[in-house]
Image (tube, rainbow, N blue to C red):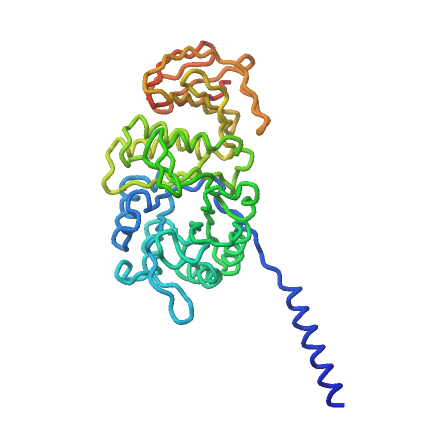
Length: 409
């Protein structure tokens, strides 16, 4: 009888455990309702790399407010690699106590008091790219920790990921974030190696489409085992990806290099094309030491309106003639953005006849033969013209002519 009771108990326990396993399903979908337009903010890596600290992050938050960037729409203050200290005996991560003596919760509270949001960085592998503790095996603990700190954005990198498959690894951190219970934007940063645009829409809010950006207009920097890319090289790698982007899920051609050493014309071209791409606008410069020219580029209202347009359609290259690429981007309320990009080192004279342009993705037509549009220069405060006459202009070297076309009644 004892053997029978013991056997029945074992069967009952096995059935219970099996049933619990079947009833427990992870939620591998990102938090809904976030990043309806491309995220805007600042990240520490491009300018400061591993030299991050509590004092620096507070300075950047202060500058985000005093320069007017917050009011222009920049929201996130994102700490990249090297903030990490050690894990405790239970496996929970802590910040470097020398660099962040007040702790991350206090820093998040400070950021939030400025009307901003805090972003943080981790890695799907055992170590981050900078050699700090990664999240592999600690995903749910780390997500709980970030939520308790008040984190609003997570950039999740792809170094030291031996044997991992990207889609599964990013689904794990997504499930962890959902379980932690705090809405956090997830930035997938696996460099486009495993076609994240094909699976990332339900997993993250943005995904890197390329390797790292390099502060150069048109070049590639070879590091031996990997490469970083200039603005034009990254731009060319966006071909064919626009169909995957939209509200809540964005192609990410990497952070901005505006203000990090290129001349103003190249910064302007860089920024304009990221706006045409409906790309996340994450600045990477020293906010407290910006030139007026850099600030003017980053806060241009018309360019930002094109990037943040609620239609959420990524622009496309319509034609490439000589050294000039012509891009179109459909906007809400029937408007269009047009950008002429001069890739050459010499000025180019334009004599552009307005013709019908059809966008098969948005099912929208730009039809100047049937409707009249006003033509407003985004970067120069000039009197608007119309599409009734051909466009005649000069596009400077490594620069753009960016226009907003609005239907006239």
